[in-house]
Image 1 (cartoon, rainbow, N blue to C red):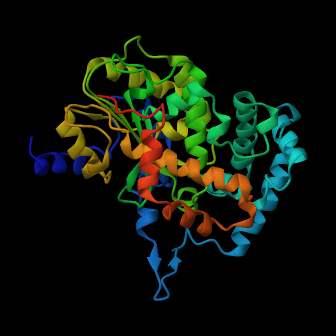
Image 2 (cartoon, rainbow, N blue to C red):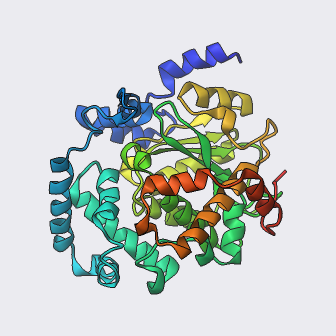
Length: 378
């Protein structure tokens, strides 16, 4: 099938409601026109394209992304009020974290949750409370009031993280948003295991999502998700309890999920996706769009909806590539080790990002080669 034919088909269909999920089509029809417009904006990435740059090189946002002081200050106060209103059994971990370190649960930290919820203070309070409940369960009280770094992950966690089944793509989508890539629905396959224990991939997911949540662009624009389920089935079926746990984390991390594109090529994966659509929350359900076809058709479809398919870490035979992902992890590890000597509070975000970019690529590559957990699947 030619690219022009697929593109024309997509313009008419792919960003319209996915007819395969009829139960969600009914839910979408019940949304107000205002809510439907929000769904459409998330799918198309209009906000990112409305950004402009001045002659001074600084970035300016149109209404909706520009944040004057009064837009931030009042919601921050409202967020404190909403946290106060939460039931005590819902905010125990959050209160414990605030007691342990007010510096950690700072205004900038709380702002991430407000941005994820488009400054809805009540929803941000619920997300923040759930964030710490999940963090306490995954990492324990000792790590509750500080950032999770690679040295906090055990050997099996790092093997899962290094597997490359979960990656942040190098390219942005049409709306200038980061793209999160999931391989085979984060499942164990014949060629290689994604995780040894369920908690390994869940802790890996937590680490990756909270790393990218430090980016102001991610906070303001959100992310898009591509689930590549082509080229065979999992060795032992789908772990739906893992899917349920991940779906819960979607509501706990300070990142807005703007769209979700499951890519499938068999009836098996259709059943998996339909089951997952029942597990996820209503917000994400409205942003679910299934892409069906072979590898070439899927790549052209992703390109048509603004996803940089050329940087997807898979071969034409649907084999996974991990080299870029391992370099990214090695770069992060260097930064984390440097920050262990100099607390992050002493550096601006810009200085931190500059430090990441100025590491010698050759030394990063060597670090990957010397790592026991570095490999390429396929």
